[in-house]
Length: 423
Image (cartoon, rainbow, N blue to C red; front, side, top):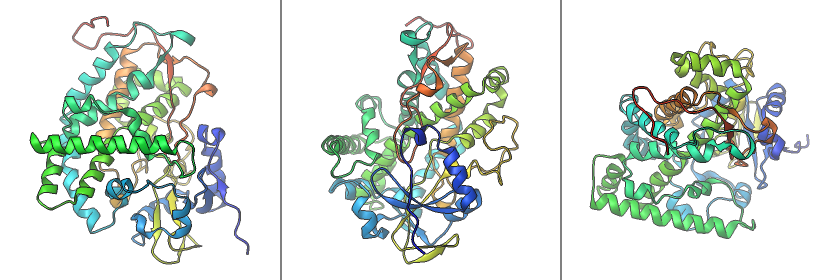
């Protein structure tokens, strides 16, 4: 039988709402050939049960060396030498190397440790709200909550969690986070992309030198010490810092926006959550399930041709799991397109599954609880300042979020127990 044409995963309509397409794919079967804007074709897994099995399948490796020539020709991976220096982090490692590298960071993100950060996270969130205008209206008076809060809060939290000192945190450029977006060799934006890579690489070198000269008990200092003890290569150290700086903040920024959009679309849930803040932990889980910032996983590869969910997949072809599609599988979550704050909590896949389950999941959960709780409590009347259809969704291949989030609100309330000084 001829191979069917791959299904395109691209375009503004798809990025705005991919769920109707995912529903059709799920109904047709668990695995499909798809094509991304760069021309890369892949095998996409969509159902919950199939996704869970795929994420735990020991036959599927993450190391880019497993990719075949067809994948490599269009994968738009980083150019050398940056690819070798920055792409050997946890997401691209397999056991036993992955096991040893992950062990170096898990304690820093252990639930007990990140829970102890909650009061500091609350201070950071309140400081950002304190700096907002006294009120925001529609149109020209709207506040972009991405620029004013969602893009800032996760980085401030990350700096606290990994031990990035203030003088280095102040020099981090948010646009460096864009280097994970595919920019092909023939793309006119490739020179700018490569310049960002070089700038980020220089910054990481400065972080390493600084933590070596003035070590403390933070994660960054411990990773530098592990490199000096021979537990990591220089490339693995740089790659892990790269992963922390990029993967540790942009997804949380995006998740804040997807969660708020979902609440704006369900005002009754927003008002209930504002009135019953004790619901926030369960609400965050439901918001992660409903519309996760990690839409698709990164590449996986079979070392040899094999059957995957009844389909023959060639060795080295990329296999990707749609976490968003899995989390709206009606066989796992009844009425999956509905935001249900009383949903019996199940094991959604927003943070993945298996050995590559997001090591920062506990921190991300607390960040979201603090961020959403603070915004709902302190910004009465918080609402979209533009029609929903005018929101610009980021064109990222693997992630979901809005590029901006114009909002209106009434005068901010003071945080409990103190007065706000007008900015």
